[in-house]
Image (cartoon, rainbow, N blue to C red):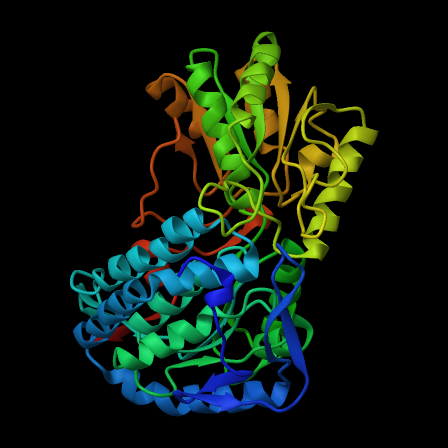
Length: 477
């Protein structure tokens, strides 16, 4: 499968109690951002739909929670295998609904969830489900019904980082996927059912955040909410969840800085930063959106970034050679375009890209991938999350100044330091963010992922992500 024209999608339906539940009310259109055409519809769900899903999850909870961790892990292993079997369909679906280039969809959008699911299943064997501490037996038990609310930029990956550890822990789940990219959760539901996940353990309610999302966050039958999205909405969820004292796990925005030290290999570091800034068309919460360089190396870094940018092709996301597709929606295109215009108005230098439509691609949600130089660290484009293919280059005088700039943000999700390894490690320890990469080190699926400050709370991935979905009980003897 390599063309959107070969895809077909089911009629609008929620997934409740192990089956598709047809919906004959208002629907939400799913738009292909490359063409502007409608490719599918999903239900515009209601609070009553959430009630039904919570009832199913509540009924399924006792038996699933009582299932041995090894049995739950076996189901999760089979889910990983099922996702792998449908990987090409998943990749093509995400390309159609989000505009992600098909090569990247195969590698990351479809491939990463398979690996994360398998890795999570492998945690069960050695995890300390119970332990003796002096005269106490400490046991870790599932929380109950978990509400999961996921974004559109990595629709399946964000699903598995919440749903898979939640069900491995023995919880049941009600998911609200983004209405922009709602199609792969149905594939996951079908795969999970075939893998032997009991009916009611995983449920999907489609709809808007204002209706379905708020119903999940405030529902008295839900014990925990895990949300990935904007800081603004994360604050709203926290307020709603506080009424029933739910546990809340938030993975929110970012404005990550990549500090290039004087002893770094500049010719290697600059292209690596650009790649992480424009990854997934910049629609990544942990993107390296700020490149911090010594003042005397600013112009050289700008030239290297300009040269690296020439390697990026913008175009039809179904084309195997395309590296940057459209943004996920017309609304997102307008938002990013506004930021690019603001950068120009504030006096930043356009190195490449800039305002205006992409020639020949005016019918889709495309923006020009843009690099700004001579950027004031206090300017709008240096401080606010743009969530598009926009990199800003900021100069610093000394390392204290670089750390000050990196930390001078409400966010603290991700970051990077490039330089001699021990030197870079010392600087990384001073960066206030949940993760820092040294010389663009590889991703570790067992390491915790999450943020400081207004980038959220809690952690996903590995043992830390599993622990988020467990209660701790001390039994005194």
